[in-house]
Length: 65
Image 1 (cartoon, rainbow, N blue to C red):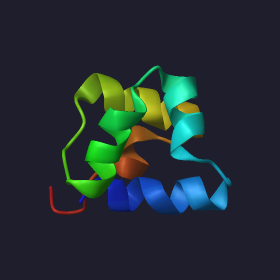
Image 2: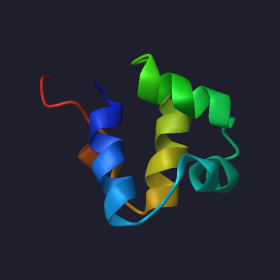
Image 3: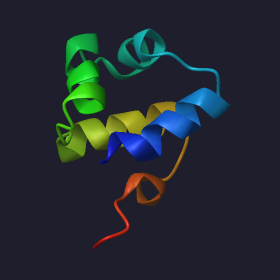
């Protein structure tokens, strides 16, 4: 699941979903869908999340590609 890549980075950086929502402009409800329902983000939102966390988009990429 995509969020499994994001979660450890957020924990390491001591960031919350609320913080991520404010930094990215993505609704917190949308972020919770990524987290709890396994919804995959659009490319644009994935880029926003990577930028906010200051990581490469490749770090968030699934290993099975």
